[in-house]
Amino acid sequence: MERIERYRIHFKINYYLLLLSMATLPFTRFLMLPVAILMLVNFLIEGNYKNKWNRLKPDHQKLFFIIFSSFFALSFLGFFYSHNIKVAMADLETKIWFLTAPLVILTLDKKLFTKEKIDKLFYVFCFSCLLVALANILISVIHYFHFHDINYLFYRQASHFFAPHPMHPSYMAMYVTTAFVFAFLSLFIYRDCKNKIVKFGLRIMLLIFPLYVFFLQSKAGLLAFALCFFVLILYTINNHKRHVWLSVLFVVLFLIIPVFFLHFVKLPVNRIQSAIENLHSHNESNPTNGTTQRIAIWKSGWYLAVDHLPCGVGTGDVKDTLMKEYEQKGYTYIRQLELNLHNQYLQTLLALGLLGLLALLAFFISPLGIIIKKRDIFYLSFILIVLLNLLVESMFETRAGVDFIAIFQIVLWYRVVHS
Image (cartoon, rainbow, N blue to C red; front, side, top):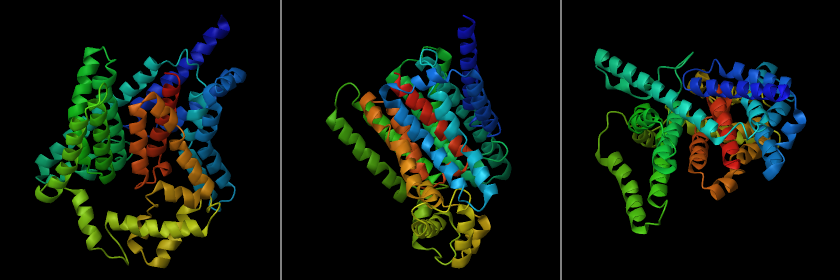
């Protein structure tokens, strides 16, 4: 009896730490490293390793445990052929959740870590995102009325409330879009929320989150939100019965409306339209705007990655390699900003080579079979959101990216397997 009680205490510690991480993730990254370490310590103190290992056996979970933890393992191996040890150590610290999440979460007892408890984690995350969105919108509106400048409502000026520095709009848009998908599904598909206050909050999210994503003006964020909205509406239309003509009508409208806005509606800030214009008039020798900078560094990153196949330059040497390349090509502005590759696929290929890229792709592609089988639209939306954002941001190089992606990926996998 005492052993069972001790076992439940260790589970509660892990669960409350997960709740803490979900609640604080949109606000600050300060607590994420201590939480990851505390969960690892709790895992070691609890012991009971035989039962934990046995929980990985059914439904080929052992294979997925290896896939989910392989990215951290390869990053650890990349440490040993890196020259810049300090950067390599910092990179491993950033990626600690790629070790903690699969090791701790996948070995939790499904009798205790129930769907209700998992959904509670997502509700906490959603309401935390709502508070951040409302706070940021309020601050932006105050700045707008004070300075009488419309730009204070958009992009980086719309992302204030995050410690120690404002979060990049792409990451904030990724969080908010994920929360929007869960709120939509909870209200219109799952219909499993009984609490009236929670349901009211979810309805508020459906109004606030699209507006906030528009204010954030992240190009990848806008595209990811549009894609998720498309999937959600199409899924809702055909959830119980196929409605072919209604679906066709929705698809046509979905394609026409963005084109109309891009060509005929003058918005105060439109970064997608600006990006298209910048592509036609840019300085290839020393690009200074975000879109053309990405094209320049992607080209550089691709050639560097190919030159360092098959193993890459090592976990800690990507930045030094890129800076030398920028200097050689005369990219003084990019060198001054010390930009990474802004593409996680290229970043991983350059750092860890072919095995690293395969591990990255397997991390997201391997669950697709069970996702489709279980028709888990939330999990599928999450993967679409992340894969799209990884095309334009090196999200595994920042704690704001790693913490969110690792925790959600593993919790969603656990949820779909045991549902």
